[in-house]
Length: 110
Ligand SMILES: [Zn+2]
Ligand SMILES: [Zn+2]
Image 1 (cartoon, rainbow, N blue to C red):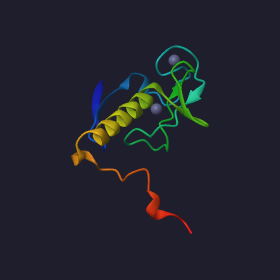
Image 2 (cartoon, rainbow, N blue to C red):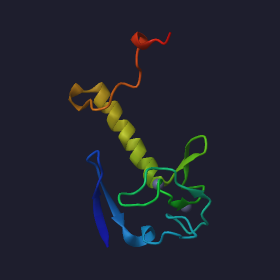
Image 3 (cartoon, protein in one colour):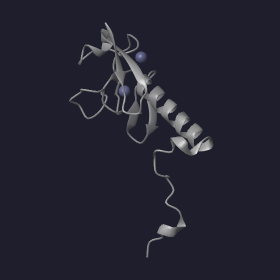
């Protein structure tokens, strides 16, 4: 069984019960290797956890910051979001939904 999950940003992910269905799988969500990392990515819709918490091996974990690891799927979602944000910034201003990351010199602190 697979189900479609529409995320707040409008993207659609397909969640299949295989792997996701077992909350405490002892092996990587993508291969038979033992779990070494729990994903720190955003939780799946409806999850009670604060993070994705998907258990993955080192091969399928992506370190994106100090003590922050993402599972393969969260990493792909993040990459796509960053790519779309970059494309939106470079392209039309119609998709500018996020405030600029750089506050600019006008907000200089005293
Ligand atoms: Zn793996
Ligand atoms: Zn994840």
